[in-house]
Length: 476
Ligand code: ADP
Ligand code: MG
Ligand code: ZN
Image 1 (cartoon, helix red, strand yellow):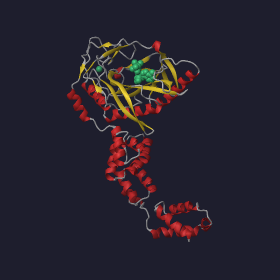
Image 2 (cartoon, protein in one colour):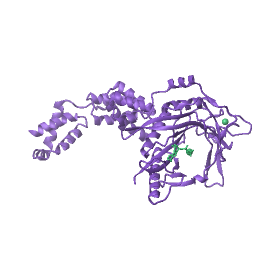
Image 3 (spheres, rainbow, N blue to C red):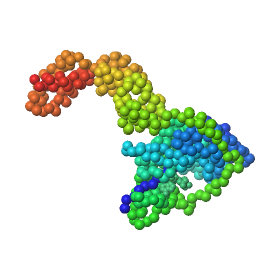
Image 4 (cartoon, protein in one colour):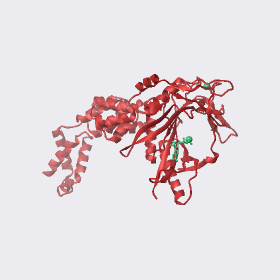
């Protein structure tokens, strides 16, 4: 029997507001424990929450960017449970009436496009953070994070493979950063994902029993955990068993998932409307005004890069993956209008360099203008592509203009035919045995001769001219 995976993702993104959702405490990361707290976010008796308008604004931006219907009226709910990181004993969230629903985004895997439905987006507050030190007989709690605003984005069960899940997640990650509502930092936990997965016989209508995977803190882990889980569920069914509904934890060291709790042990949160907060009402003018402030989104940009610059889809995908990278790419093209060459250098040399140094594009040691100037030097035949790589390194280390480096180091490519001819004659005279071999049919020796000429000219001879002259002289 052939099986089909069915996947739905729940994503939490931390919003990049300066202050918390219901009080004026700072949201900044990394402060000493319990310094960003007040009676409201500590859940003292008698305090009242006051909604931060920026949180609603950011959520609506996300709703528009993901084609959701923004509800004019939504409601706040209390999700009740006890845990030491939750001082109030309930989390303020949205339940029956979320602020946005019925959206979608289009993703692409292996060149085919597909629409993934978004069930809902709602706002809620984050909980605190517990630290467990194995050497001490107690745990510690930090309430700096309680009340930090989150949005939860729930997808329809439209995803059919780990790759699609990865593409969906990457695109949402890219969108939150494009529209500036979250920094999307997965390691710091400001972008988190739970994955729901079941399998069913291919073609079946009914959904299978799902498991919910937690502790997925990188894109790679999400895909790996889903692969593992698909196989685990398949084996159970092939062995004649039944999948049980449960929450499972991904173990990144062992590359397996393990059971955390079954459905029977799941909490009953006893949601009810929060009596301290009025229903949220947003007017259409505000929504329309926010619509106008949205930038060109990644999917749109990618398609424009394909149609306007004739980029292959994979290049366009990478060039549009962040707004900063896209801007860098377009700035380069303005100065050097050969898009494919620009994307080649960005994907190969530049991103390689940035990765190695753990930097993002906005910290690039090489400006877009300097990269464009370097490409111009190659294009005009002033330096070879090979020399350009050493100039690139120099630019990265010194921040100097490429022309200056080429000039100072004497790297200008030799295109003077007679100068090259002279070197070629010398090389042939020094390697008579190889010349004879070549003339007897060992045509591969051409590589050897080119290498020798390049060595002699310190890589500066124009390779095309070198090849032509060599073939000419060896034919004599
Ligand atoms: P819960 O209330 O437990 O979070 P939801 O019904 O809100 O459950 O669904 C959570 C996520 O699980 C959604 O993304 C949804 O698409 C997905 N989902 C629901 N049922 C299944 C299933 N049988 N298989 C895979 N995913 C599912
Ligand atoms: Mg859930
Ligand atoms: Zn506070």
